[in-house]
Length: 137
Image (tube, one colour):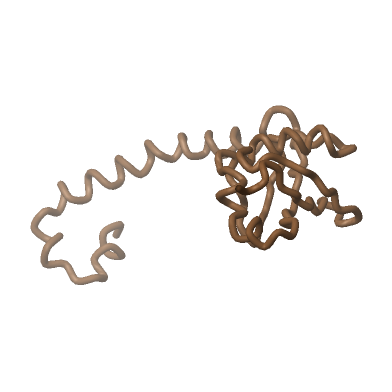
């Protein structure tokens, strides 16, 4: 049967040092990330880790033996690239500013859109493509 453990080489974000690790084939990518948090000196938070194997970002739920199947059969350690996202400021500023502008303009376009069909129902079907330009005038 296949060995329960497999060797992986984790290429660090800096690229300075590769980390060889032995892990269980049945582990999920999420379990590997938790393991890397303990193994790496910088203790990267699993939530900020991205593991890339042969050009694909691995999802936390993926099982190593499934993802690395071809490499495991080759019996040489699989190389995974670790990318650690830098945590931003605590309040997640990306989400808040985007949410407000989306909410404000929403009421605006709706009133503009609704009167147009009701004001000129006769012209709408027969109007040439230039009609929207003439509508405001």
